Length: 125
Image 1 (cartoon, rainbow, N blue to C red):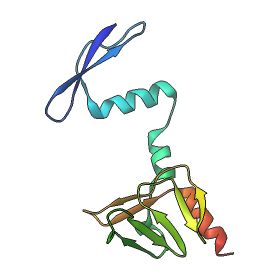
Image 2 (cartoon, one colour):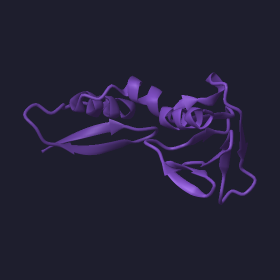
Image 3 (cartoon, helix red, strand yellow):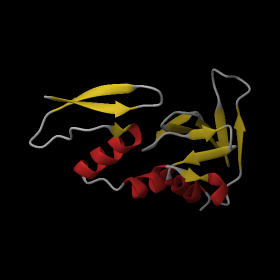
């Protein structure tokens, strides 16, 4: 094995790599995910667009409630999205999603998956 060193925020972390031609230099931490995605044939931009839709770019009405730090949630239309989870609730029924609900408090942005948006749209019919 070859020790690969990753430059993190303020430190270097070794990663052991096996293979025919492993890299032998420092790799920035943000590049590791890109390398893995490339090796797996995953399009990160497409996956990000599918899993994390900024609700401000939609016509959906939402509120975010972080009053109780043990149960932060967002309400999108009549759907309840516990933050940091991969499901939403309708009439207390759990509906699984392909990605997690993300709230960025510094920007006030809420992100949910395209699947969730489609389920909300379907409920309007």
